Length: 286
Ligand code: DGL
Image 1 (cartoon, rainbow, N blue to C red):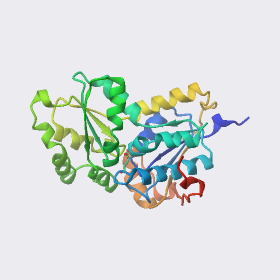
Image 2: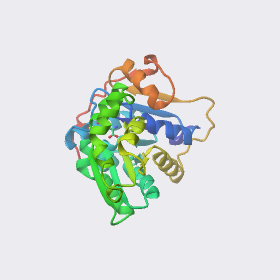
Image 3: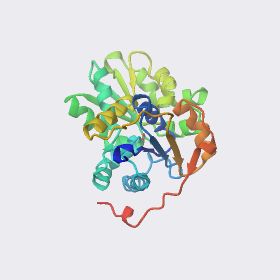
Image 4: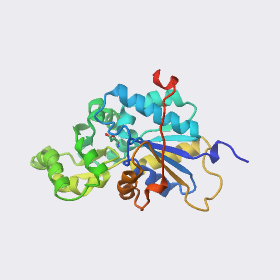
């Protein structure tokens, strides 16, 4: 018997960054089939207008829904910050999980001073989605949102380690390390799924005493919770790993850079390249 529970979970990001979330979902829910879409043809999302990000996110989400998914994970902070409500409205009854609230939840469990630094793309920072999400959990918290858009390019280039990564991290974050201890946050949130690979460079520039957190593990937990609530969990034990990787451009680059994000090697032949042509419907936002 097949039903919605046997469908895969859809996960999308503008590029390879969301593979860190895919990895966490797979680790927590190994019986689930996963289909990942990296919208590499339109990357980066983080420097685009909210209207463009909403349109791109809808195209990606509706493409996955048409292929058949039981739940969507928006493994992109920018799309979560800008388009989550629109996606939930348009995809209902398919549940949609974003990464901002799980990221905020992870951060608030770690902070003693309730002073946070959120590193994100320009679009996410402008939206102040983390400020709202953290404040909802911890009224009175101090939240600084710092756009670090160049980290996305570094990650997509595979340059997350080395002198260039260190020097760009220093440019963005050296000022935080230079502050007095009382003025420094005690938690830095990686508010972009491209940033976890840059964690060593970010940690060096921030200096000691600042915990660095991302949303992958807590997002996976939110997915597990929602599957249980909606009674959509995979019924059968998986015999082998069922992960499909899709991108909208550049299979070779996706494989080269994405392997580090996924934590295991794959090649261009493992990637399906698709054109996610918008229908007329897709372009009319609610
Ligand atoms: N990985 C995405 C995020 O979490 C965005 C990167 C980009 O396309 O700018 O915000």
